[in-house]
Image (cartoon, rainbow, N blue to C red; front, side):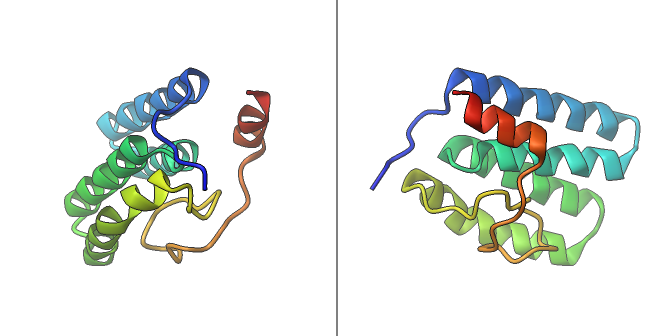
Length: 120
């Protein structure tokens, strides 16, 4: 079993870039674009407990801001179980993390993120 303790620097940079875009679009009240980059941050960071949990925390806050009960409930569940699943490297790769998708469903990874994962 592989244990993921710390996100590699090259992935951390990509993760932080997605969060920067998320905040930019959130400030501009372009919520669809903000959510898109939050989902991308989840994909990049989901194999690492801290980043995975933080993405879900931001998704919970976003759901509260949008008064989206389904998202809030879904994120609470994901916050409870997501971090430890990252720690033991048992996450559905590509999953965007929102309550609009099953939490254990692997999804297609966007090509640019796939290239990033393969670049090590």
